[in-house]
Length: 233
Image 1: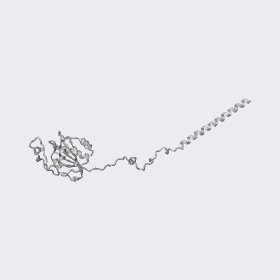
Image 2: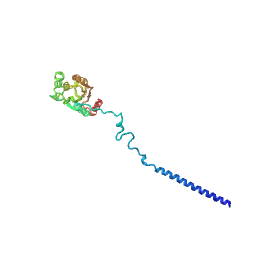
Image 3: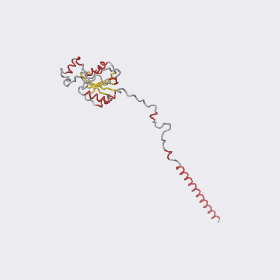
Image 4: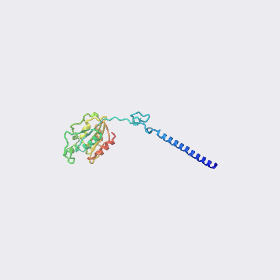
């Protein structure tokens, strides 16, 4: 009888312990669920503005390293004499690249194709070459309008016997280049710039003359633009 009572007492104790264990597991599981739900999703968002940065102001605007904007320089003029339109084309390319104004040198007595035939000893250019006194070529207009407003002046011409075509000399002698940057350029199928730029500089007597550039008679616009960019004007 005592043996049966001991068995029943052990069974009751096991059931009681099992019930207590179940209640503890349920209480622990419920506490975890409550913690997750108490975290609002808004707390995971980035703030609309970073602390310490004024509204509407970017970091670039507040940086002390922001370079100053340089003021726009003076006007640019491209002056040219073109006997067969080759120099005119280059002048146009330079004007496009710099936003410059154009000024064509037009002789009062224009050169005809026969005048320009340097192989004919009796042609106009041949006679002018042989007699320097004949090289004074009058122009329809020697001084550009608003000349004083231009800070940079390109001067273009074809090469005649290794020097600038003489209508260019008439223009250079008629103007004061004081305070202006002057860049000569020429067109030639074979001859280089030679001393043409230096001779024009000596005739002018004023201005800051840069080293010039010689272009082929049929030069591409990209080549001309690259040269202009290299000047750093």
